[in-house]
Image 1 (spheres, one colour):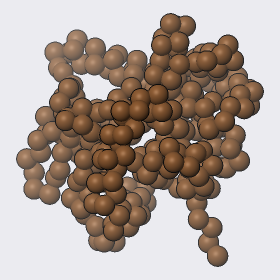
Image 2 (tube, helix red, strand yellow; image 1 turned 60 degrees about the vertical axis):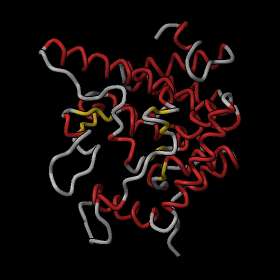
Image 3 (cartoon, one colour; image 1 turned 60 degrees about the horizontal axis):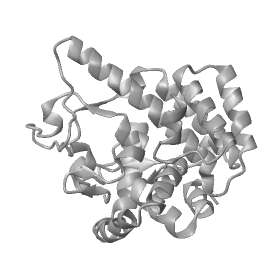
Amino acid sequence: MTEWDAKDAALPCESAAERALFKAAYGYFFSPDAAGLTLLERHVRGEKAEGLRAAALVMQAANAELDEECREIGALFARQGQTLACGPGCTGCCFQLVLCTPFEAALIGMYMRSRPELGAFFLTSHQKWDAATKNFRESYLAWAIQRYRNGVDDGTHCLLDYYLACPFLDNGRCRIYPVRPYACRSCVAVSGECRSPTQPGEKPGMHNMELAAYTPHKKAREAALALLWKSVGLEPAQTRPRMLAELVRLWLESGAAAVLKACAAQREE
C-alpha cells in the first residue's frame, strides 16, 4: 500500500500518526505475524481519537489488503479461463442479513458524514427497512446465529423469511461500496446461480464463497478485531453480532459509546 493510496482512501489519514497507524495495519494484514500484531497494538494504543477513528482506520487497511487478494483471485480465475460471477449490477448478496462490527460501522459513518446526500438517502431507506423488519429481525438474527454458528435449527424461521434490500442499495448500486463491511467484501459469487438460483427454497446470494477464509486474511482479521475489542474494554466473547443498518444508524445518531453498548452481550441474571 503506497502513501498515495492511504492519503486518498475513503477515510483519508489526517496526521503523520494516522498514516503510521494505517501503514502498520496494512503491513500486518499483508504479512500477518506476531510482530506485526504487536506493532499494530502499539499504534492503536497511541491513537486516542474520539468515535473509534483509529479502529476505523485499521478496518480500512484490512479492507484495502482484502481487495488486493480479491484482485489476485480474479486474475487466477482468468488465467484458468474462468471468470467470477460477481460484477456490476449483481445484487444477489445485497438482500441478505448483513452483520458488521462497531469498527466497520464507525468507518461507514465517517464516510457518510462527509457526504450529506448519502446520509439523507440512508435515513429514508432505513425508515423503510426498519418498518419492514422491526417485528422479526431480532428473532431472525438469533435463529441465524444458532443455525450457522451452532448448527441448531429450531424451525422458528427459514432463509426466505429475510429477503430485503440493504438500505445502502440504490438502483442496483451500493452507496457505500468503498467502505462496505467484511461480510460483503469477502463474499464472492462462484456461480451464476448466486444471482438467479434455480433450486426451490433458494434465494439470490447463496452461491458464493467467503474468499478470506481461503487466505490468511480471515485469521489475521480475527486477531486484529480481538485487539480492537480489547482497546475498548471488551473481549470478543463479551460481544454479540449486530446488523449493519442498525449499527450505522446508531453511530450516526448517538456515537461510538452507544454502538459499543449495543454490541456488548447481554448478561444473564
